[in-house]
Length: 199
Image 1 (tube, rainbow, N blue to C red):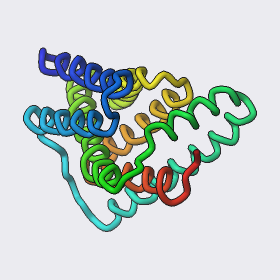
Image 2 (image 1 turned 135 degrees about the vertical axis):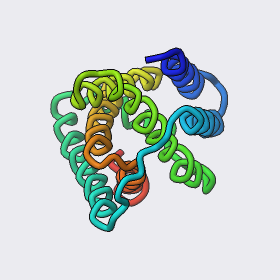
Image 3 (image 1 turned 30 degrees about the horizontal axis):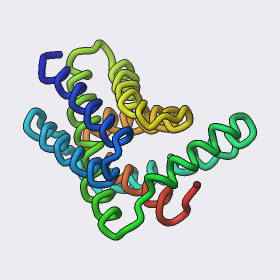
C-alpha cells in the first residue's frame, strides 16, 4: 500500500469523526463527506464493472434483501442478549435517520453509492492487490470499514457494519462489479430505513 491508501484512511476517519461527533448538521456534513470520498476514490481507482447482466442485477437485489433479513434476525437476538445496546442503537438510528426529502436523495444518490465506491471500489481493491488471499482482503476491508464508524459510539452498530462489510466485500470479490454492490446496498437501506424499518 502506498501513501494514497493511508491518506484515504486518515481522510475517512476525519470526515466521519466530524459527521458523528461535531455539533455541525449531520446530514450536511455526512453528505459532503461522501462527495469528497467518492471524488477521491474516482481519482485514484478504476472501478470494476464486469458483466452487468440481469442475473447479476438480480443477485444484487437478492443479496440486499438477504442482508435485511439477517439484520432482522439479529435484532431479535439482540433484544434478548443485549437489550441495553439495542436501545442505544435505536436512539442512534432515530437521531440520524433521514427526515426531509433531500436527506433521502442524498442517501440513495450520494452516500450509499459513495460508500461502495470508496470502501469496495478503492480500499478493498487496494488491499486485494497487496494481500495474499481474497478472504484476507475482505476481512481487512470490513475491519477498516467498521473502524471508521467507531465515532457513532455504539457496539451493535459496529457489529452491523462489520457484517455488512463482509457481505458486500465478498459480493465484490465474487462479481467484480461495483454496480451490483451499489444495487445490493441500495435495496438493503431501502428496506431497513424506508419500507420496513427495524428501529
